[in-house]
Image (cartoon, rainbow over the protein chains, first blue to last red):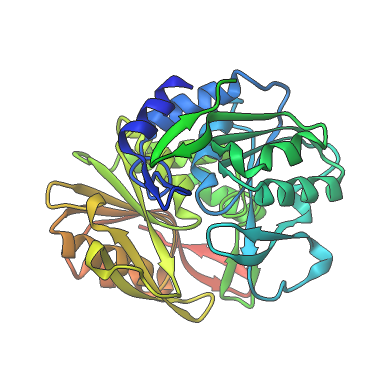
Length: 191
Length: 191
């Protein structure tokens, strides 16, 4: 998505040739015009969706935008819990490693909000090693929900998350895909 | 807002005559049709806004909806950080006590995203003791930003948060205001 790539080049900040900071328009301050355009782009690439699944925190904003493009289908966000889960009988859980924070989290969704009748689009702001997305996929599989795809705002292709998801037969769409960083500049994927 | 009150009566769950669980439509699964209606209701009650400020996590969804009603003004969400702030020179911080979790958090916003040119509407899902809202107000005051008001999805009037905010001369709007719980049922405020 050309508009997003241009914005990343203009306002993104690369730290240590590895971390891309896009907090002025994606995940601390959010450009809602851009969010609306990203949501439209995502919706053009999927169909027959009746629920959006994301994970707190930064995915929530984009999940709302995408839901609006699919007639305001419900949004469910998985919760991260470093602490105890009160009642394991009522929630689906999965363990997720955070690349940026180097921590393990248990993520969970109440069983009332995922079922075998759901046709899920997973939405998140970042795809790197794929751990958050794989955790969300795991929750859907436990519920027997159908996964229609994974839609990502910014992918860091070189960290391999896409491959792991595609190996499960699940479609991945990213609005901007960074192939690699080169001497402090961004090289986007060609496909 | 009658539609929200009816939904709370229909789907809200009261725990220990104190905690209202509205996770099936507000803060775990989100009813996006209802979110759009809530956002319109909020926007009718404020004007001349150029930025929405909220706090992770559950406020973000509603901040996006409200932004869309004000021509897609930027949304900024304050981050909660139990851990160290990397560089105090670059962020505004405030200490916030969480009523439901009984923990203290430092909340912060990057100084690039709040300034004296901003006309801020603070948006959050819950108002109880008012600590989160007062923390966000504190951040705005440090930045010299103008606070146009505080818009809340569900207020628990009996916990006193509104009074503390109004004493600062700031307008508070809640879409549903719970006066008190009575024998496990909800009594809404009359005004």
